[in-house]
Structure formats: structure tokens, C-alpha cells
Image 1 (cartoon, helix red, strand yellow):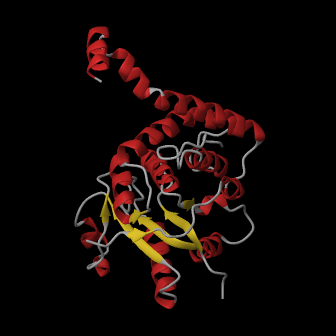
Image 2 (tube, rainbow over the protein chains, first blue to last red):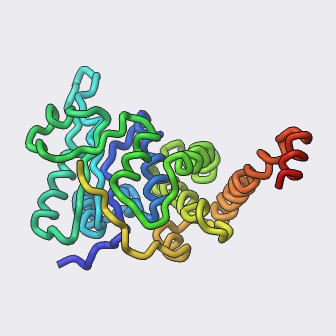
Image 3 (cartoon, helix red, strand yellow):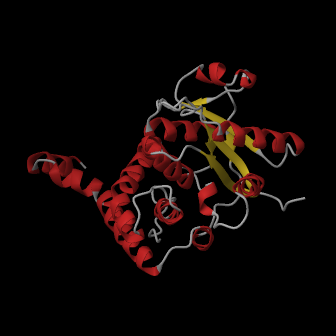
Length: 207
Length: 65
């Protein structure tokens, strides 16, 4: 049996593509602002098979968010549906069914009722609809979770603006243009987490 | 509508954040500079608003108080 999950850990099951970048940053900022610790499959160094890493990550997190908004058929001539996100959601549902007290999962979408068309077995699941905007992601995070003291969506948006504007310098420092690179993810999380209590605590924020 | 989950677990400490997301000292320094700039800008917002009020209105407010 794996060890108990991190009570603040959130496994993010998201697409790693350019079009998703602003929502990815919003997820990181929003989760950190709620003092939740985001985790991505890409943050674990190589070694194990990718699927094993993902299973371990799911088991180590108390929550997971599965964003199915980009589950679609690509426009290329060799078009294939994108199955990774539903596959990982399926593994999570199995884990949660075996150990209900250890895990809770959420499905996120950009449009209402789209999930009924793409995965009708999920009928009855309340999806969080982010409308494909960073503000929508932050709004839905604030609806899905609450803490005794937490920033408002506009306050989270100001931190989102900071993270977005810092991205280029983070790319330069890490010699990459890929926002999903482990090093970039780490810096985005540290930047966002340093401002978790800024809006309601007199303590000076430190990275 | 799903009921929101109350996060009752203690917040991660700065040390725990650093352990979760290790970065180089140079990156820490660069990010700290950004955070300092951000906090200065947002902490001064109220002062900026006050200082932008016309002097006459400010005087009236002060005498009314």
C-alpha cells in the first residue's frame, strides 16, 4: 500500500501544448494561492516508465484535476484523438474507487455539456467549466476549494499577471522555451507560492 | 453543483514549498526581485490612490475628519 497522500497535493492532468499555456499558468497560480501543491507528470526525473510515474503521482496526491477541454481530434491528415487525459482520469477513478478516503478527483471542461458528448460514461459528474480563460480557471478553483483565509479571484489574477510576465525571464534562465519543462514548472510554482499569504498577512513574501 | 472542499490541512511552510520545488540560488534571487517589486507596487496602491486625490478634496476630507 502506498504511503498516505499529501493532503495539499493536486495532480494536474492537463495537455502540454502551446494553446493551453495561459490556463496552465492559471492552474499553477490558483492552486498555489490556495496553498495547494500542484504536481505534473513532467516534474519527476526519468527512470521509471511514464505510466508508473503518473500512477505514483496520483497516489501521492489527495486531489486531482483532469482538464478534458482539449480532448479533440487534431487537424493533421493523420488525425488521432488525444487519449492521454481520459486514460489518466480512468486510472484515477479506479484508484479512488479502491480507496475513497484517499483521493478526490475533478473534471474540468471549457464548455458546458461537452463532457456528455466526449465521455458519456461521466454523465452525473459535475464538471467545472472554465470557459477557456485564466479567469475561469481561477474562478472554478475558488468554487471547488475553500480555506478560512483565501485571496479573491481578482487578487489571484494580479499574481497570474506577474507569473505570465515573468515567463520569458524564466525561459532564459533555464535555456528553454517550453513552459512545461520541469525547471520552468518549478520556478512558476516557487514564484506563485511566495505570494500565498500576501493579501492577508503582514509577513514579507520570500521565495 | 458539487459542494466545495474545505481545505483544513495546514498550509505548507516556505521550507516545504522549497522542498517541493527546488530551484537554483540565482533563480531564487531573480524571483525574489520580482516579488519585491510586485509587493511594493501593490502595497503602495492605497497610498497612490490617496495621493492622486486633488489637494482641495484632501483638505476637506482631513478637516471633516
